[in-house]
Image (cartoon, rainbow, N blue to C red; front, side, top):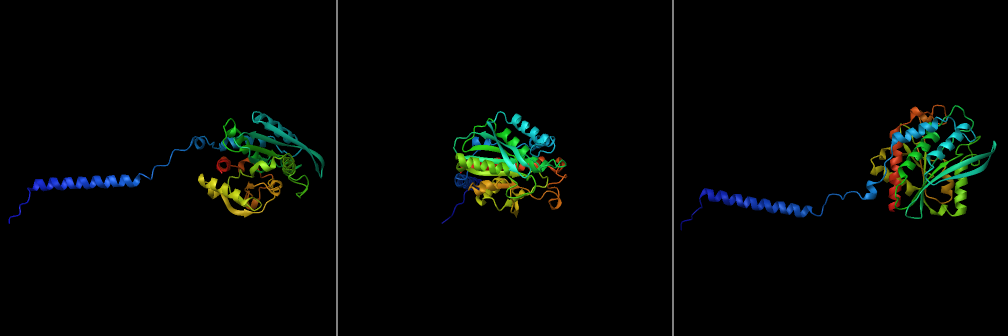
Length: 320
């Protein structure tokens, strides 16, 4: 029997057709396998509208506050700061919580400022800081200690203003009387936060607070926020998740510290709290409570990092 082979051109054509068919099948196979793995969906409208802190603007607010000079209770700088807060927050459902505190220097009139931003849920996320400085210290302007949190809270108010907030309400609080009048002790410190915690316990507000975030000394150019051991672990975990989402985790929780601050009266009342504080200000904390605490030690990037993490934390808490 004689076996016949097709001409070369016919073989080549057949091979080309087979290769093309095989390639087509492979392409279809890849397309079919890849179909379940789709590109990430575009962000929701809520995520797109999530505000981002302007560090330069926060620093400008801080600069304006520091320009009033020392802000201890009853000082001219203290009164100017209060007038400034009233002006800046006049459109933000501002409430003033004034009270008279018994101190080692006698009775002192103090005022907490609370700016309230509505939400679709009844619960409240509280973000706080203090605006006063060391009592009687004319050489201490507290750019970082008191100034940075005051300025950043004003920038947060600007970001939240006019937003349609889904989820919990957000209340921003500027505490008065955080610093001791004579010497730090359980009775001579935290006047504003102790007063407001007691007031809110009495009127039922306290049980509506889902989370309490305290900002203190958060403007340091060398930013390292402590994991604070009096804070609520799960809430600090949410903060760290927020920092990680934004790529800022290297600035958070490398150290652990045990600190007394404005979160304590709320922690003792059972409120979930997180104290976001960088308690390593200058070499061996040498700028803290000294005339060295000045604007040149601060960074708009640090304010942007902390503020943006706070906003992201609020967003995550609203989704919980």
